[in-house]
Amino acid sequence: MESVEDIVIVGAGIAGLTTSLGLYRFKTKKLGIRSMVLESSESLRVTGFAFTVWTNAWKALDAVGIGNSLRQQHQQLRSIVATPTISGKPSSERSLKVQGKYGEHEMRCVRRKLLLETLAKELPSGTIRYSSQVVSIEESGHFKLLHLADGTILKTKVLIGCDGVNSIVAKWLGFKNPAFVGRSAIRGYSDFKGSHGFEPNFLQFFGKGLRSGFIPCDDQTIYWFFTWTSSSQDKELEDHSAELKQFVLGKLHDLPAQVKAVIEKTPLDSIISSRLQYRQPQEVLWGNISRGSVCVAGDALHPMTPDIGQGGCAALEDGIVLARCINEALKTKQGVGEEDEEEFNKRVEMGLKRYAKERRWRCFELISIAYLVGSIQQSDGKILNFLRDKILASFLVGLLLKKADFDCGNLTST
Ligand SMILES: Cc1cc2nc3c(=O)[nH]c(=O)nc-3n(C[C@H](O)[C@H](O)[C@H](O)COP(=O)(O)OP(=O)(O)OC[C@H]3O[C@@H](n4cnc5c(N)ncnc54)[C@H](O)[C@@H]3O)c2cc1C
Ligand SMILES: *[C@@H]1O[C@H](CO)[C@@H](O)[C@H](O)[C@H]1NC(C)=O
Ligand SMILES: *[C@@H]1O[C@H](CO)[C@@H](O)[C@H](O)[C@H]1NC(C)=O
Image (cartoon, rainbow, N blue to C red; front, side, top):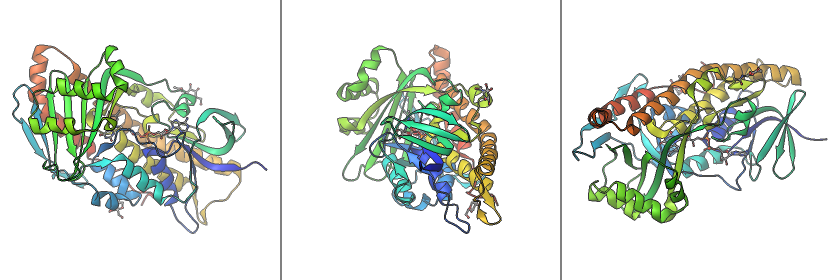
């Protein structure tokens, strides 16, 4: 007899693993809800070395029980120091140790590899099925048939697309392909193999349409990024790390020497370039985030520009809310229900509808604000530039904290 999965999640990235763990952590009388995670790569796929994990994301990490282990491995950042490159003097230093609506803010720069490994380690073995690229989706009664690149066909009741910006599940739900915003980002990661000597601060530099940032993950490693308005010529740079490094150093020649040294020290295999994409926010407002027993989460739902550093944090929030909505929908007096297929599907469908409702505005807002912040930086008029460099720096810091002041809640509603 062919096997039927209850829940299949496509993509073992931040969103997929958080959702799977959120379901598994839901323990009533029986074991948590099992899901299968399909990943196209042969092992966990890490792109971009590290990322900013804001207060809202720590709440999500705590909800799945891995916050403290990650805290121990990453420094808490004290302030954001923003410097317009025209004057070279820090224009604003803002403490991150401030109270928000949900307690004191917390921000760290987390290594992506560590995060994914920590999530994966907590899942029951065999949950992630590697080298399993979904190439098409077919409807079959109450089920979805997933066709994999190697010819395998899997049958599932529930399908969750956490398959990133080029999501095929999002396409199946009717979303358009994300659009290129005309900017690119270069990211790097530098391991000093000893103390790097930087304070635990997020350093940002603005000016002439460029933005760069340098953030310690711990006392030996620093993650950095650089965004600029890119042309088709720049596309050729993409696969050449040595040229990318020279390009960034050229653009950032007026940064302090100690900061430039971070880029100089970065090994060529620790530099990547990405073209920035986003989904039109109104699509998220009107589109089908869920349909029947299919839905999307993470970048598959809300690809956004990295200007407020919230894409991955929002993927963590999605995972918690989605797991909670399914957990609650499947909860019966006897524990997790074992009723017939139609009943199971009906319950899940309601859960996914709730998830979509809960996430729609939050995602709309994050995509819009990230896009707006990005386009202000990108624009070129002299007066705007002057204002921007003076004001944007401090404005941005306030905005970052405001968007991070959010609690997605726990795995069960209380
Ligand atoms: C330059 C840049 C800087 C950023 N900085 C930050 C930051 O500081 N803070 C922050 O919070 N966010 C940041 N982000 C955003 C963040 O990287 C993403 O939001 C996050 O990685 C999304 O996670 P995800 O799990 O949704 O998707 P992904 O990480 O893309 O994972 C998708 C997974 O699905 C797999 N997959 C795809 N298609 C298939 C298929 N058909 N079948 C099987 N598997 C498949 C892929 O191999 C991959 O493992 C940044 C993004 C960029 C581009
Ligand atoms: C949402 O799904 C319905 C079918 O359930 C479809 O008619 C509609 O066009 C979809 N909306 C979008 C924006 O794709
Ligand atoms: C989630 O659980 C934690 C720990 O039990 C608790 O401190 C927090 O208030 C809860 N959050 C919500 C939104 O219920």
